[in-house]
Length: 349
Ligand code: HEC
Ligand code: HEC
Ligand code: HEC
Image (cartoon, rainbow, N blue to C red; front, side):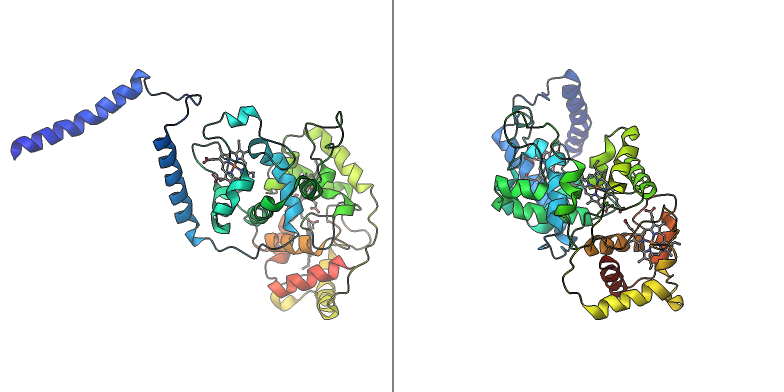
């Protein structure tokens, strides 16, 4: 008995030393060119699937059948994901196909995952594979928008995809551009409607637009989508973009008939506030003559965008300009139905 214990102890000491020795010798290959053995490949994917299933057990998906999610996510997919996974507008190139593991064609694999599992993968990425995490970990709404888009991807042909993502320059030879997603892919006035989570920029003050672009650029206003769109632009180009959008006209839209009682509730709250609940008068800062140019215009903005931003302010998730704390205070005590009413009111104003 004592002898067996002795062997076990010697083995326990020797095994790690031997392991370290093999690692030190350089005999373990890190070459991607040789690929994995089939058994290793199967094992790694088995581990990944199990890990994603377990981690997604506590994830509760919101309703995803919302057309507002698709354009914002499709544009981001083309600039942030298609480089690796390909898209209906571009195949995977040989460089990414030589990655180990190669990024799969998502059209084929998306149906094998549930919504909660896709959320888990897109939010946190996959370690040791090159699959990146979502650049902003503090907000989930953008990740859900991406999951909603991924659900639509398998049935999208090139035409539907180009329409959703706003790709440019995919026409004739010579027009193909290496950076086909531009600001207009997402923000073109003609693409937006009241249900969009992408904001209208036309008619917003230059000061506010510039401060917001700087806030995205420096990660003070968290957004994976806008972070990727402006993160690599030189800071000197931002004033020109702000000037461009500030000089655009924002035509009044023909609005579909609204729930008038809801709009009226929104008006009451915007004009009078509710002091018992510490809700200030919105119109004391926004959309009045001589308003501070750092305070954004809300009238005519998309209702879905207003709703989403009020929700982010209420949860103190949205940062922004040096005045954004004012808005975090203003939104702190709003109820869900207040947010619905205010968004309806301002969008049709
Ligand atoms: C740098 C390359 C790269 C980028 C950029 C990238 N991915 Fe991936 N992705 C990968 C790799 C590699 C895998 C792992 C494949 C594997 O496990 O076999 C992966 C896996 C996935 C999977 C799981 C698919 C499966 O069945 O294995 C999904 C879903 C996914 N990516 C979505 C996205 C989305 C959405 C984006 C953009 C927000 C994105 N990826 C950006 C490389 C990338
Ligand atoms: C892939 C789609 C996409 C692209 C490309 C894109 N945007 Fe955006 N943009 C969005 C979304 C979505 C938001 C809302 C983000 C948030 O929740 O903060 C936004 C927000 C903004 C805002 C804040 C407006 C406000 O009222 O606070 C500005 C300013 C802006 N974008 C300008 C630009 C400019 C300039 C470019 C080009 C360099 C650009 N965007 C490219 C989707 C996009
Ligand atoms: C004390 C002044 C003040 C009051 C009162 C105020 N806001 Fe704001 N609001 C701001 C400022 C400043 C911003 C810009 C924050 C930033 O820097 O991003 C803002 C931003 C917003 C935005 C985001 C707009 C966009 O384009 O992204 C919405 C929506 C909004 N406010 C709605 C409201 C509503 C609804 C109320 C009333 C309940 C209200 N605000 C009350 C100052 C105020």
